[in-house]
Image (cartoon, rainbow, N blue to C red; front, side):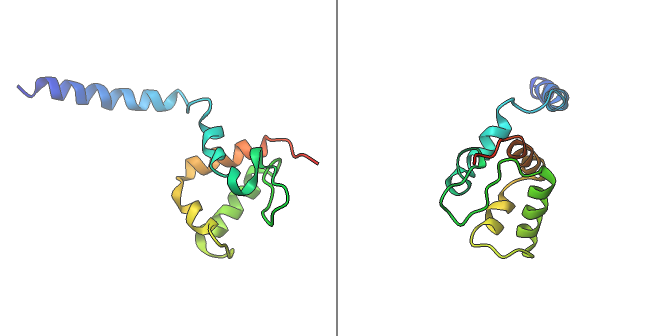
Length: 105
């Protein structure tokens, strides 16, 4: 009676690591980074705001800044809250995506 549920759970348990090993969705980093566009501009190229552009900034620098927001070491209006809404892996994807963007003059 419990065998079908057990079998389904076993298949799911085995499939999940395999699926994770295949890597994230090809658009996942871009989709996560799109949530930043309201403040940081399309592709991290902000214009006419008091917000830092992210396009072309090294992933390490972006991650260090986010860590400062998360810890409270860097004052912020909203970044301290936004930065806590993502996992470390998601933040790495977002930072790498912005680092790969070309800054516009």
